[in-house]
Length: 78
Image (cartoon, rainbow, N blue to C red; front, top):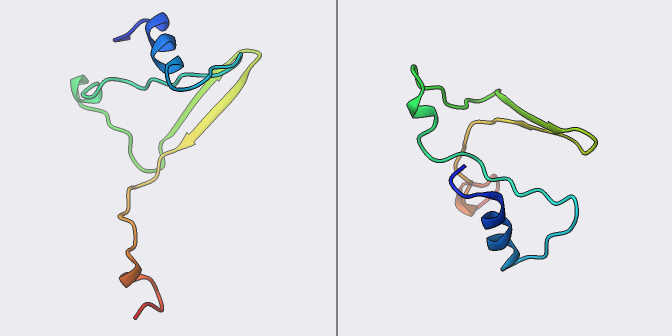
């Protein structure tokens, strides 16, 4: 980790109230996948799962990025 837990809690506490059970999800530094040989990036249909005993599980499905539709490209737009 780049920052230790007390530093993260102190920083986040400056702009929100943390309650028991709150999770601070930090992710990973940019370039982590690039450092693997061969590089391994998340791709569409990958699944990221994590779990904490006696707390629960989380599951995220990776989807391909698509640009947002502007009003001009919405069906029925003039």
